[in-house]
Image 1: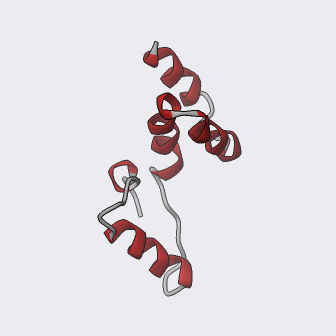
Image 2: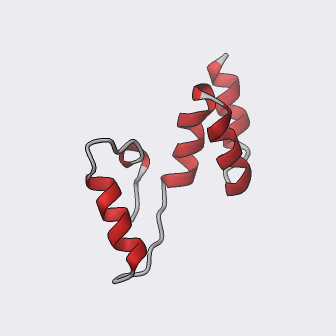
Length: 71
């Protein structure tokens, strides 16, 4: 069941490398993985990374914005 998969992924919240692998494993793990990967985004101001992230978040194809809580 999906709740069990969510629980397993929740235990991986401090392991971004494993969360990335889980997000590629299939849609049942994708949302739970993204929740932990994109909740807090730390970007230095006035860098290329910041402007790229803004472009991604403004895109109509953006799928990570709903998981972003802190920027």
